[in-house]
Image (spheres, rainbow, N blue to C red):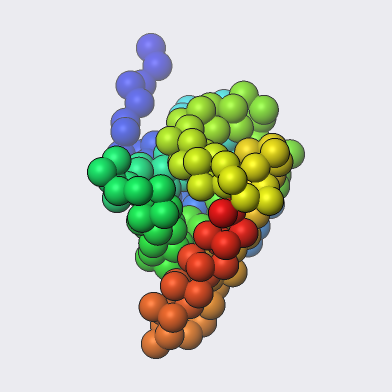
Length: 188
């Protein structure tokens, strides 16, 4: 009889994978992930059939966490610019607070290990974010551009802003506002 799965062990494996991938890249060995999680190597495959499945689950979890963070601060009572500002602030703050998660998400965003199904699930979950970006860009130069392209441009500006804040935290507000204004001008 198979042992019941333990949510704490599963989460420990995901946390260990996040830490090691942030340090070593996507080539981090599952044996090292298991060791860091404090579980036998075979336990990784009890919770995730393959390393690719582990990476896909991690991608979805990180995307869900980020989406939940930014949508929690968006207010439907605000106008589009104010909503986008809240989105921007939440997104950059998440990246500053979670540098390892941010690095891992960036790697997974460009990895061929992440399936199209996982990407579609993540995009579907993040639809409120994409809808806001669509509204923000409805009248600008990017109005006819595909939303995934526009979203990638916004993400690139978020990454540049977040990196600057991490390198020079004393100027965090300045970088955040300058990045927001650049993104807003690019959209509107």
